[in-house]
Length: 218
Ligand SMILES: O=C(O)c1ccccc1N[C@@H]1O[C@H](COP(=O)(O)O)[C@@H](O)[C@H]1O
Image 1: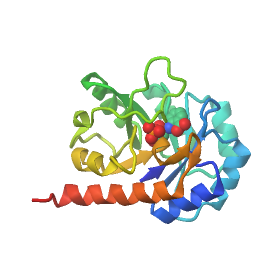
Image 2: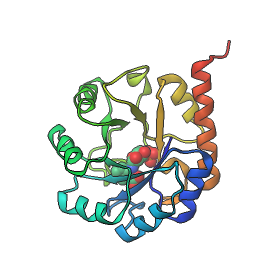
Image 3: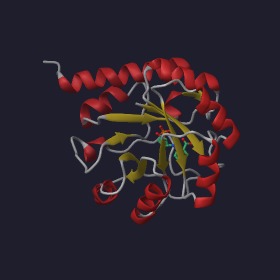
Image 4: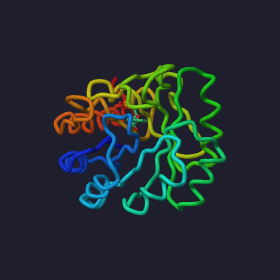
């Protein structure tokens, strides 16, 4: 499980204590979850072992990636813009870190891109496609039709994202068979403010969904 958009030390602790395996830091100034590099460094240094630190960027150039990685000890990069397949491969080679590519899904036509990116990325993040004109390419609290990706396999591991909440994540996991899930706005009390109780409820519900998938109720 990944909890994205951590901005305060308490968020990092809450994610780790709930059992999340990944914590995300957003480097995108338009986002209410944006963190400056110095702040992200402090948060990353406080993260307990076992919580992989993911840096989320949107169409970042090398200068920005150089600046982030010079300061912040990240374990993975999440590319959440319109980066091409070639750019994903370039970033992976240049920085030597695992790369997760986010792909927005609204219909069947979007699934081909997942296969293409899946051949170069280490992970795929299958998110809802942002509406035209949206300020953010993700983190909008919008879900897509999960039946589109039910029981799908791609060349690399994948995470389901987009509009997940403590109330719907069990159903999303049970329906899709997603091996991992990612959430941002669904575990907040206000934009950019994570809620420890919602984080704990989300992780517990996602685990319940995985059990439901493995052992369906009769
Ligand atoms: O969280 C953000 O602010 C954000 C900004 C820019 C790109 C992506 C962002 N978040 C990612 O989007 C998914 C879905 O978010 P939500 O759960 O629907 O709010 C999230 O998992 C983040 O990885």
